[in-house]
Image 1 (cartoon, rainbow, N blue to C red):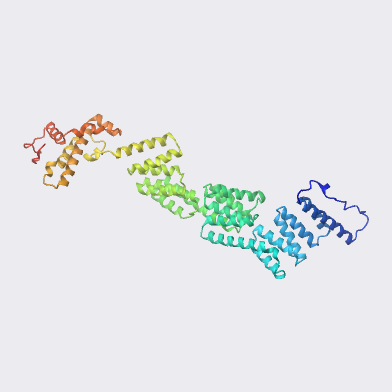
Image 2 (tube, helix red, strand yellow):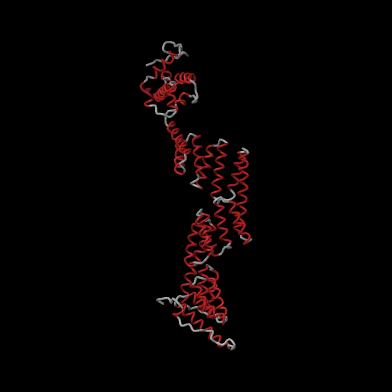
Length: 499
């Protein structure tokens, strides 16, 4: 109808209790009274005043509890109020009293579909077709049943294959028809949890618990979300509650056992680490990783722990690998990013260290992270210059005498005259090295230039050393050192010609 009645005055409701209480009413009188209440209920129903209609249907049934059509009408009213379980109970009672009441079967099928009970919907559809095979009114229900059944079966296949995204898609399609199916909604929530979409999963579980606070599956899903976010203690409380409500809840029992085993292994590994039993800790963390591949957050921490232990054992490349595995699981894992950067620094892979530390500073702009980034950038800058210490074959703490001795040794090795009979390519290579030896000595033998070089400052044009004749520097060095030459040769008797 176009308009809804706003009060009882829209319907002419006459008193149904005017009879003298002392007068015994006959069965026919009671039936008439019940029918009048049913008619009033029908009028409220047509005006979409379903709650008022429900009251009158209840009164009719209290008078005549064995009239199938009353149950059928109340079932329709419950359906409009979205109280599908109550509607289903009434529709079943209706066909129990009148086994070939077509509308009763259709209402049962509709309720089963909305509630996601595919098996019962299919069973009732077959029963209806046995005595009313040409009924056109069930065409829509047949299509809906086939639709839900297809996606439900696809979801089961995908779930077994751990294709959780597809399960979510299939459950959404099932819920197009089965709008009040708790099982479909919680299956979706479980798969959201497996995919790390914890907030969405928890929202679905919470919606269910607002209606049914003791729903074991919803509590299990909340426990899953806590467990996968490494909030183990709270997760345990949820799993224990599930097992009190449903001792045979296999999924909760299985994940509870895994969670306890995982926590035990992690604690054992941490204890070994504190005792500096690093290889033992590494082995335990490795074992822990095999317990539950789906626990992403905890496994990220286990990979990080392995990386820390590997670094302690001097296995830096392995440390980098483990940090990378941790970051694959949790891309925002700052500790893993910093640990990997530290290992890259020790491996002298400065570009990678700078990249990680730049990302770390984006995530957390602390003074310490900025300092580490500055150090990495300086190290990268230094790495791209000539390493004068390496050219002379000395360490960075070399004394002045060490520098002189190293220069003398390297200059003698690479002086071009010593390679006069070499190929043209070899001559050019030795000339280049001889020049670099001179550059290195020119910088490192001067305290001021060496200090600037050590601090990473640019030495412009090698402080003019490109214009110095390395042969002249060589000759001057040996003259100042009072080395004895034979003519223009070396102290050891080699006769090299200068310039």
